[in-house]
Image 1 (tube, one colour):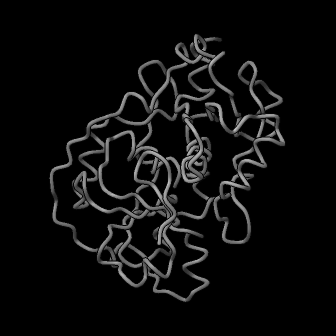
Image 2 (cartoon, rainbow, N blue to C red):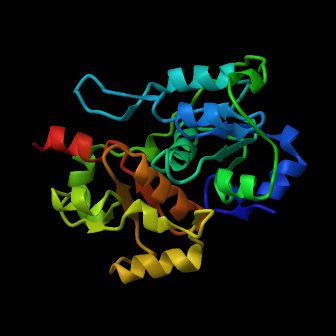
Length: 264
């Protein structure tokens, strides 16, 4: 059974459960396209943040593309807003892109179940389940209509965040080197790599996450905003927070890329 999370229909899905019933899901591989081409779960489509982020009109990098573009891409894969979707990666090559993709689906207003594959491709391979290589193995989807309904509550701008800094606890999920080069006022540093554990890089559970937050003088019962350079690594941290069912959290999608343009 998946582990339920608070709010949106996000949860973990065990690899055995997916292998037993693959036809019930559309599987999205959030790793870089090259990694997907080399090896992926048979039947999985590639859907990397690198394909769906851009430099916006204000020259801010890593901005998520227009919701209609993502909606078209999902529809082309046979995904409707109520389709059951499984997302996986390896909590490594994609810089936490599986978290960004789950966040993006929630932002788009996806109504169907969204599941993160527990243990990612590492657990899938360790269990000896079927893999495929290259594009020739990709199924041919029947295109459908995906009309996104973006949820404004999933986004916060640099200006709004600065006005509301007193309401939030800020967590910088970048590397320690990036942190020392400059960070948002009042932020605490916790690298996104500390939000998973073990060789399969499984997301921290609620007990582990609370322990990590408290160790860094954060209150798990108060709202937290996670940020990085552009919402990818922080998207993973946000996902772990959501899976743990803790109170409100936000992924500051603009990250330091937006902050440094708005507040040079």
